[in-house]
Structures are given as structure tokens and as C-alpha cells.
Length: 243
Image (tube, rainbow, N blue to C red; front, side, top):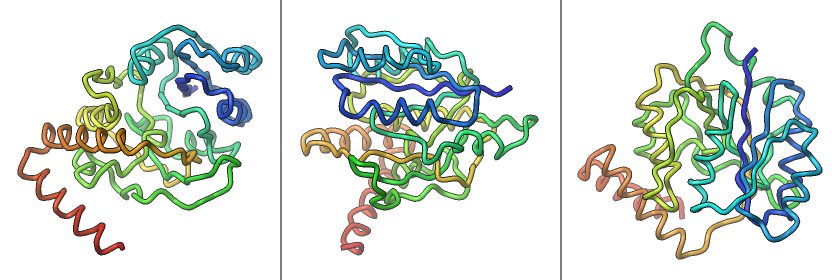
């Protein structure tokens, strides 16, 4: 039977982790493990994780070198056929989400990558709207020329396909990681499902700028400087039109 490893990395996430733990534990699909890598939190995060150990949770808590280092550790711990990354505060859209996802393809197909849509919610789980970038009908590695058109949390990959995140990128390594895996994938499957409720936390202005600079470098690496420059010119025009 197809198994899913849900990966959550945490640091002082006591206020938001409970909803994620609850969402994973309440999934109707029985073949799920929840791998949590905590960066030696100083609040009540570890105690909260310990309370859920009976819900298929496997975890460690130790210092790390940042978000993507913790994700690499989690991938090494995972045993499932596919990997799904949920941040603390993010949830599956409904209790049957994983069951519906696994039923969206036949066992003989077993796609390398599965993807779907993402909704944005507030601190209380209230729906705020759909993610601005809609998942394309057909996803390829070239799709990310338009930006990260599939949310990281709704981008689910075969564990045997996955590679480590590049730690030279501090803010946008998931963008590079997704492109690399799509280049390697033989089959990419659109589940046509709303998969994830994403907690709208936002980034600081400094982190947002650093992230955008990294994304430009990543796009130039994969798509070439000229193509990336043209697409960013279009991003500016599109932002003006939307306003």
C-alpha cells in the first residue's frame, strides 16, 4: 500500500503546531507517518510533540543549520513512498484529503510527483482566498518560469526521487529543489484537488527581498539569464495591470 511521510520542521512553534498535528492525525488514510524535526525549541513545542507520539509521530529535537538543513534531516528519517512538507500551522484541506489524493491515480501509475491547489487561511483557520498563483493543468520543470506556481506544501514527491535541499540558498531552496526534481521526474500527476490550507504568516520585508534575489539566481541557473530577465520584466507589467 502507498505510504505518505508528512514532514514538519519546527522551532518554537507551540502556538501553531497543534492544528498541524491534529490535521495529520485525523486523516482517514491509514498509511501515514508524521516526521517532525525540531530545532531545539525553548517553548512548549517538544512537550506538544510528545503528547502526539501515539499518532504515528516520529521526531527528533536538536540544533540545526536552518530550515532546509532540518528538512534534509527529515527526509533521511522518512520511510514513506511519498514526501509531503507541512509547516507548523498548515493543514490538509479536509480529513479525507490524503485518501482522495491517493485515489486520484491508479497503483500502476505511481507518479513521481503529485500536486494540487492551496487555500490561504488565517490564524483561526478561516478561509481568506485561494493562492494567487494557480497550479497549471500540466506541470513541467519549465512551469516555474512563471514563479512557484505550485505551493511547496502541495508538491508531493516520491522519496526515491528526492534529493537534498541546497543549503547555499537560505530562503528559496524549495524553489530550486522543486525544479531539480521536476527535471528528473518521469510522471507528474495533477490531482485536481484542493490539498492544503496554508497559514498566512507573511515574511519580513528583508527576508522577502532576499528570497526574491535568490529566486532570480535560481531561475537564471535553470532557465538562463536572458529568459529570466524577460520573465521578470513581465512580472513587473503584470503587477501594474493587477493594480
